[in-house]
Image (cartoon, rainbow, N blue to C red; front, side, top):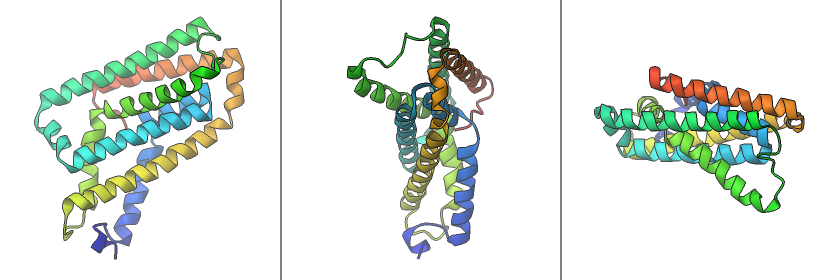
Amino acid sequence: MLEALGLPGPQELLLFMSAVFVLNATPGVDFLLTVSRTLQAGARAGTAAALGISAGCVVHALAAAFGLAALLALHPGAFLLIQWVGAGYLAWLGLGLLRQAWRGPGIDAPSAPASAARSDWAEFRTGLLTNVLNPKVALFFLAFLPQFVPADSPSKTVSFLLLGGWFVLQGTVFLLGLVAVCAQLGRLRTQPALRRAAQALGGLLFLALALRLLKTGEVTP
């Protein structure tokens, strides 16, 4: 039944799900962004960021299915350019968090009701761009998903899309669960000193990830 749909058999699918869980649970850019935004701005911001990350994974899954990731692998110049842009964006996020921590509470406090919709979109956009601008995610999809495409699949592209959709769905559920867990600590962000410490830590983490991306190219998705 699963093979007829272009998916691997039950044992291979269970292995795929287990591998996806391990990858999602490994602290990387997506994991740290979801945690930091939830702790700093609450469950709503964390959820928006998580959905943005998932949207970025959709972009990567579609690109991999239709060959863009292969082009990146064949053209190191394009890969390097996207890698530098992604690192720059992470560094920009990190410096922004450090600046907020330095200035203290009141700078980005969500006191204006009119800013709620804009803030949600900004959180979504941050998650989307952080994921899309990490070329390692594109190559990850290209290297990981084909291992689970059935050899006798009538359409490799369809199988690729189904597995990519499964990856996105499972990853979204994981990130939303992570938001729910981190939201339980949300009361901590009402303490100015703890909020500034969380912002400073988040800023340093993103700067470290930017440097790691430039030096080794091994940032976890």
